[in-house]
Image 1: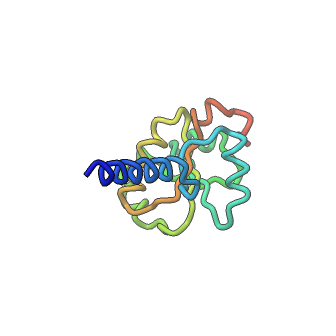
Image 2: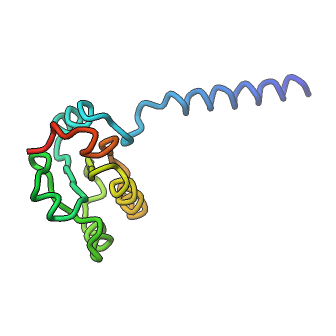
Length: 127
């Protein structure tokens, strides 16, 4: 009986370790350099700025598409997105992008990267 318990415990530990080191996970928070590098090296990726149009017009990352998180139609706009693509999302500080990503994930989008700290943490990216 003890052998069976040890075997089960050993298997559980191996599974836990394998899940911890799973490198196939797509998405998460990235610093500015990694965010841009990953975006540039990801074919067909979409760069989304979820700030207001006024904030976007004042300066944004090159090639970004503005999808205003504060717009009443944000959720319906998210439903139009291709869930098979990879999205790189940012806002001013990270608050709206985190909320936007939650909505995107709830809509079936799995491949999402977020700019850690938003554009405040990486003003050099603005064009």
